[in-house]
Image (cartoon, rainbow, N blue to C red):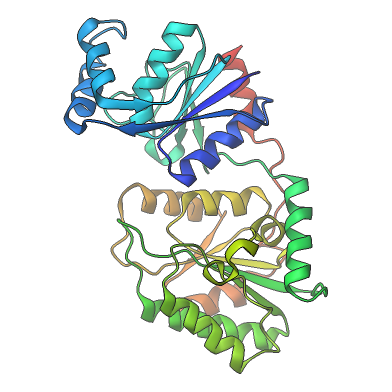
Length: 341
């Protein structure tokens, strides 16, 4: 089934849409960038889309004014990922006869006009065309695990540890302001617990990771080389940067992740991990907090905001509890196929 993805450029949105494309059988979907040209026209167009047909002259004029859209190829399915991509996707599908799928429910537009909508479970959106998801779309890739393993072994000097824990650090974002002090406290507790457990600790960063976080990692690695594997610091690897996460999520005895990335948490769960989140922003709320609370309630993750909480997790959740089976064929895939058939 040929797929084209209309994206707002956010990596998390795009990775989810690519996972959906893979589930539909297209492993090389066309990617089309959508950008805002006029914010007021965008808001007005999405508001009027509830009451006006897509081919209404006023709505079509507003869509043209609101967005800058790359050339949309012919495809059986068009996937919208990001609110600003909703109307360009619907209009292109209307013109070509393609099926329209949305990742999440676009603000103001709603789910009604799409053939299928993949909505977070915590949004409590219902409808004949709505597929509710506990985690964001992600399908484990055996090849990705093998490739990441090879990169890790090269980075670690060729030796694969018998046991290791993995810590994946993100960083601040527009709506996420983590505390460095909380991170330091949790990091030191995790280091000590790994040392006492005689297990290796693998640490990776992202492009958003602040320099002071990386300095903390390097400081602790220098003082405790026996416990740490060589860290994967994106800012210092340059062109040699690689993604270790499929291997870590699939093989690490325990996985720890900062709380800000829905996609990262979902990917860890898809690969069989039951991660522990580092809660670093006391003000984190909204849908992201609901997402986290829903997963805690379902037993898919645990969370710690203080060293004592992390100690409790490590003492009361043994390794066999914090690993599950990879979700090779998520239940949403079959329902999505039925909606698009």
